Length: 70
Image (cartoon, rainbow, N blue to C red):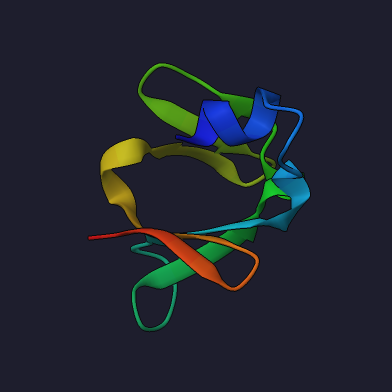
């Protein structure tokens, strides 16, 4: 899903917001925008903060629309 949004001309990846489990954050959830994603790997996505495994993703939003929620 993330690759489709990143590479498809009908989408703007900067409008994506990814919420994920973060052991280091208060409340245990952190979020990044598409503009903060540096790489989409096979098992993780990378930001300037580090690599986040896909299994930690809890919700993905595109603008106001929820595309995925665990």
